[in-house]
Image (tube, rainbow, N blue to C red; front, side):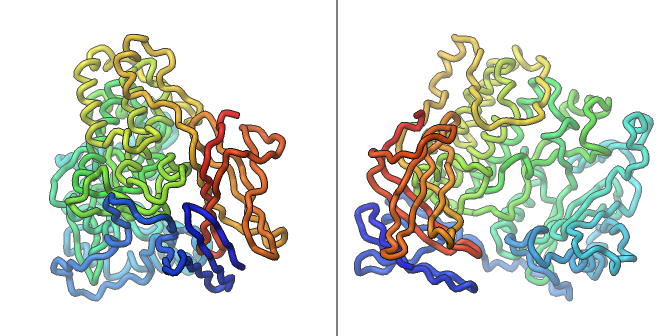
Length: 553
């Protein structure tokens, strides 16, 4: 199949090899050959310094690697998950019950006991996780070293909520992370993460291990080496932010949560670490090992929040990218195909861009999470409106940086904290929303006027792009799903039709509006560029439209 596409002022010819084993794509621009890299094709790079994620994915440092006989019998490739065909949880658990136990015991740690390990040969091959529990009992309360988590007990208050028979610290693992305790102090519950030597994750964790404690980040206690890999040792923290378990009771606790997260992200960005996986609070933990995650009225939890003893921290750097120290936060770039974050990404890459600022994208991802969970707090705490809106601005160059957002929050707290700190926090909404919300509704007009420069304006009309992930072999049509342009409108749905004789893709129809309506073409779309590339087991394409349209139609 041959696609001849006119776009951005030059001719592209794309050949697709439809071999089942592999599909390759070549791209020729006049007489000069251009290789598609990172699934990204586009006009010449601008003068802004371009740093692709691929240059920091490996390293050469060895750091006195320990020469022992421990080997990992499974891949640490991030593309392999519990949903991958052939995933073998038994092989992973045999590893954690092997020589690694004696190795960690020498370093002062005792691994948890794997549940039903004696009958591992009877496990269901479809199992994807295993369960474990601590080897030693732990006294409830905070350990002396408060980098470690608060341990809930099993006294009468838990009998009241029906949890007395549940193991308080039962955990599950898919093999890359495992749990244990310090042998000399059973109250110090720890987590072990397997990382490759020299990887961005290793470099990020090594940096954190040089600091005893960093606000907003889960601490790293030490890095233990073995055979080209490392075990990052961290205090075992738990979820709780997005559940009823530790939902803020007042605005002061809410603002503390915001300041924790912004402090952690600002530290990472200061050291040129892009997290790349801040979404849905899935990589945010609290220093609290709970018996359950659903009962908010347990007195112990209320007391911890009231006494400002709950800490929130970002963790998990397996998708992180580290830029050189001299790269400007405002001028760093990654290829659009390296975007990772919210399921519905910000408009950083929805307007046809070939590159995006990954630091700004981190801020937008965190801002979107905060907006989804706390948007209904602004009538009680108006200062959250300019802060969150500044973090999710559709223009990355106008978006607050992590350090700017942190500075803004701290300055506004000095001014407004006494007015709002003791006000009750609204209850958590059961269905957090992303779209259709206005943070500034019902706010005092003087406040809105003073802080309006942080209010995000409506997006302009302009260029749109889609990722087309399938080719219908029967009808020979490319199908492109609609994309979100703004919080209030949708881009048109387009269909690219393949002419089987000339194989020239053409724009045949555009649908406008939220609801399905009559099909019609739009004269303002002036140009179309179709990029084709391998996309897993299928052929993928990215459609880029040039021109203007009325997204409110």
